[in-house]
Amino acid sequence: MSSEVFTYESLVHAVSGAVGSVTAMTVFFPLDTARLRLQVDENRKAKSTPAVLADIIKEEGLLAPYRGWFPVICSLCCSNFVYFYCFHSLKAGGLKGKPSAPSTDLIIGIAAGVVNVLLTTPLWVVNTRLKLQGSKFRNADIHPTNYSGILDAFVQIARDEGVGALWNGTFPSLLLVLNPAIQFMIYEGLKRQLRRGVPRELSSYEVFIIGALAKAVATTVTYPLQTIQSILRFGQFREATDTSKLLSSLRTIKCLLVNRVRKDGVVGLFKGLEAKLLQTVLTAALMFLLYEKIASCTFRAMGLSTNHYKRR
Image 1 (cartoon, rainbow, N blue to C red):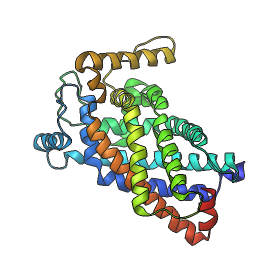
Image 2: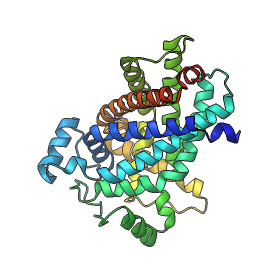
Image 3: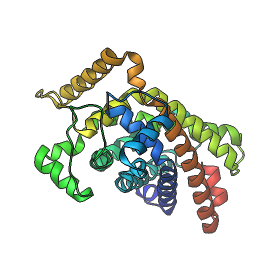
Image 4: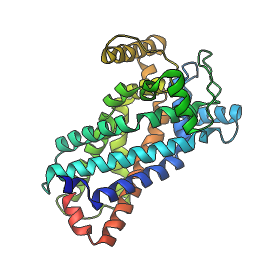
């Protein structure tokens, strides 16, 4: 099993996925800024994405949509490296050369997601705080933060709120492993359908389209939980203090969901979805395209291309 897990092939997938995701996120980063503001700032009106970005630039400057870019890119790079490595290692070890199926892809995706969440949640908590630092909120209850960088944010959060605060939002994040799991299940399934049993390299157009479709479905299904995750990572909501951590997390999620519905109706659970879909679908499509091309070129250079496509 260890020989299947620790391979150059898994490493190529991991590096390709990390490079692809970092490049794609950099291109579409302002869209993610608009989405995050709509999620955490309840008093900001749900305007169109261009209108939200125009407001941010007008109030905070031309570079404001790229605030927090570096910590986000660091987190994304680590997160996607872990996820792609785990996904393809577990797939290679579990299938041992046999054809995959949608249910198998889903289970492997969930397992890879759990490992990823437990390892990288502190990075995402810090980058959410840094990305929103200095923002002008409509909600007066939001308190400003003052972090000088990634390491300073780690130190201040651990010192002032406890080490456990670095894992704020872990429970909804664990539920949200369904997002990449569904995404990869649909992506891998569509890829098999397009190949129809023939080991060939998909065209750029095919990869872009199926990557976009897979992410659109996964994002829409899990979006309300993504909103709760962003609020908890921002650290401005005081969680319930039950003796049971699981019970406390469930009550917090329920409370936040109910408050959103009471204030804005069911539509409030999907506030910022337009910005999220625009950003995440384009980012995922470009990421998969770059990932496939980088991995393909690397495997071809290693002389593994034919066998590689048969196993995938």
